Amino acid sequence: MKANVGVADKSVRIMAGAALIILTLMGTIDVWGWIGLVPLLTGLMSFCPLYTVLGVNACKRP
Image 1 (cartoon, helix red, strand yellow):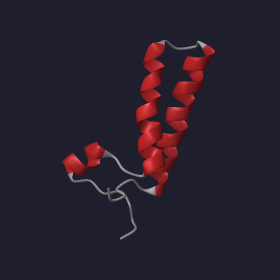
Image 2 (cartoon, rainbow, N blue to C red):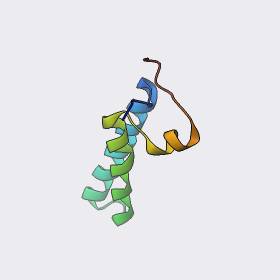
Image 3 (cartoon, one colour):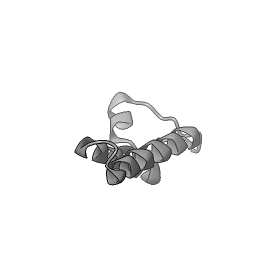
């Protein structure tokens, strides 16, 4: 897996994913908040399968 998620995108994904999971654990939102695992994991791994399908590469590194 080659990194295809840039630094800014990575930060937003991690913060959004963590926020959704925290809100779910606090009971503020329903079970659908666990979807926050997807952006959290893609941010931590710096790889997004959907970006690969669409041919997007937001990572500046070679």
